Length: 253
Image 1 (cartoon, rainbow, N blue to C red):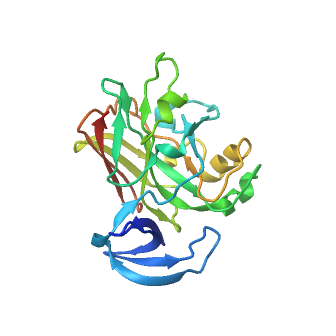
Image 2 (cartoon, rainbow, N blue to C red):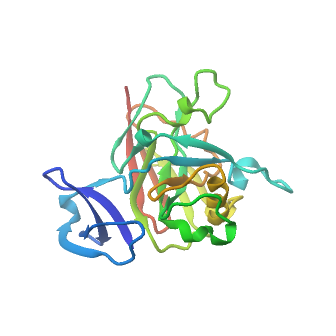
């Protein structure tokens, strides 16, 4: 099931199920609910797609792809960082970056949490996953150029586009990820190259943060992230198998 969050002409926001070129409005949406009361059917052309969730927090994993960190006999635990709720934007929204800043984009498989959890064992972690979407972990070299995982690098407003929808039924062990800037391919990877899988990622993050419905975990990015530099006027397109395409544009502020 493809779940979207959308706005209609009068400004009202709804959840819905995406079906080809139409969207079926969902009444009383809940992440815990398995049966939905579907209302009217609206042509997708009459809606504005929004970020599919408004998370309380976005937790990111860094260095979770083998092709990014290089071949090793054993791999270190990924780093963990946070992005702010205000960093979240939706499809076709504008990423605003500081004029002259060194900034790049990173394609990532994003987990959407469906149930509140803490200290989750790996064996049951999948029970807390509602679905998946595409995430763009926009990153700026911070003021000291020493650490790319501080709030000033990762958590600025508009620095986390997600979308276009949440897929609730998806096998994620062998998904292709692609990242284009102005139609030029910058990143190409596969989720089978991750160090931690989804259950391991949820379990790890839940040891440090209470996860709530709608929270998002970014599960890392493949090689060539820091070469994926973005600047004013760029068009960014990210695609993951069976998760559609997430497109955004870049503007200096």
